[in-house]
Length: 82
Image: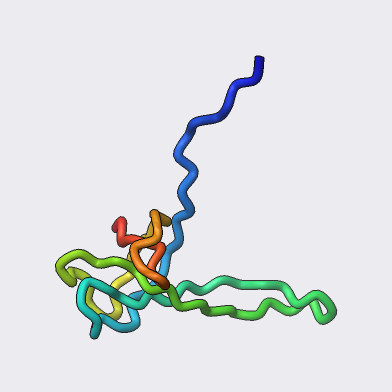
């Protein structure tokens, strides 16, 4: 008999709010450091995520924790957890 692990393993990321100009949506920039395969230098990579922000509570410059959720629209797959 096999048992399945039923823990909630949603992806969480930490980033900074870059834009709040859309209704119920914020753009969050998430930074990560990646080691270059040849030169072994750490490079800063930034990726922007569109995040569902009910009631536009986030302000530009806030540090937020975002959590993966069901697709809300074509490009929104995260919500602000804080």
